[in-house]
Image (cartoon, rainbow, N blue to C red):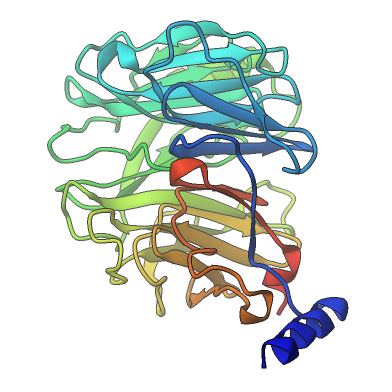
Length: 375
């Protein structure tokens, strides 16, 4: 029987039928990883104890980067690649535990470029639009979400005090879980939050959207005078641990105006990872109105992404991986392939996603096999 199983596995693999869903990588670390970003052929990951990893060969080998000076105790919850050698990493924590560090030489050396000026605040999200315009979001301080903006690839930052960002920390907060609950391009930025008041997505309104030949001065002026509105999303259960944890967009390829044809939000309650109720929602009008998934993912989900090549949405969390091929209306589990004799947890225990890579606790890194999304 064992010989038959091995022959069957060999036969299926030879004809391209059997495949691993996530190919587990050797990260060389036991740090908990929550940040990951891919720029061309280079991928970066970040996590606890000042950990930053980098690969130039598709994950075949991961380089353990130098730790920024004085950052051994920091939790790097987000990382964004500017180019193959340049990246900015964000730590989360109260007060000055929230910092930004930049490397320009492939993570051999680091420079601290920003530190949280609010002793009661904490940073949650770092995002770059086309690698030049940056957004840094923190928990509400003094009745307003802390929001910083950069127009020079993160070298300098300015705090924005736009209308519509008013919020109380006891009611609303973003989550430093996967560094992916913010998305958008060409000025149409959105970020998702949760908390006791419920789940919401914040959208920029009453501002211009720069499409072509955008000067830095134009963006600076636009963002300083922007206004925001928040739209309720049917995710979570109105508790401190629930809400929107991740957002992703599918671009509209039929329009000359760069906009999202569909946006998907995922989340739920991070303290109830197996509760599948109210864990995903979708919108087709830029985020103004949201509908709950008809068949939701199989539990709390911390990250979501859209794979343009296969037109598939993929979302991950502690108890597994789900995919959708109808813009988030219905989700189905992406199970390991028995023919490959994968371990039961091959598709589980994930925090953050930047295709084709996924990262999780205890140094877990996986790379998506493209055949896993074949329909």
